[in-house]
Length: 89
Image 1 (cartoon, one colour):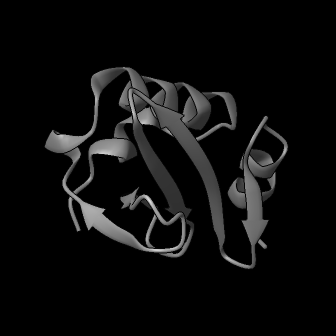
Image 2 (cartoon, rainbow, N blue to C red):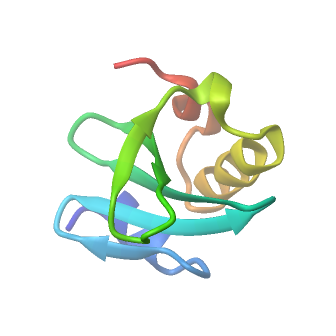
């Protein structure tokens, strides 16, 4: 694990898996899995289907603003530049 993954995993709800950190959020009837990948220094959003097992990648413009704001705050709290949240792959 890298330093940024470790720092994110110290925040509430985040957990680390090798080179990535992941957090799950549910709100407004929708569920999301958000992943930060240290090697590419990027954030990906996944919308989780009702079965809780299937997730599909979604564009940032489909993610509610309060969730995106929360992710940027988490990034900043872990020492990352919050602007990487908007980085396009």
